[in-house]
Length: 94
Image 1 (cartoon, rainbow, N blue to C red):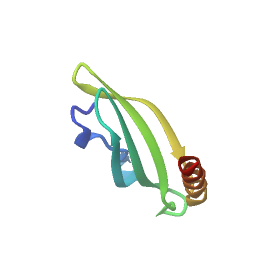
Image 2 (image 1 turned 30 degrees about the horizontal axis):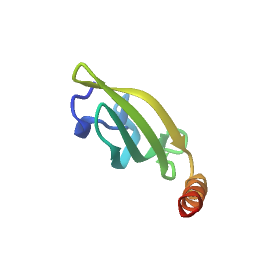
Image 3 (image 1 turned 60 degrees about the vertical axis):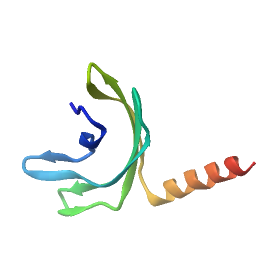
């Protein structure tokens, strides 16, 4: 468990292999409920290479001094990310 926002990460290592590599993170909101957008890659054991970029929005709740993951949404491709951007841009400009 993390005590600070800086300690929160999507990076995951299994059997000495970094299977989820965090490339970047942006804190969208801070407070008792914190929202972070991560850019990352997954390790493919068959091809022994990292996947194209993926994105994940994660919500954490801070309770008793520790951040706990409460929900997550994975944006699995650049195409899906672009569609979300397009729709949000349209809605915001209305």
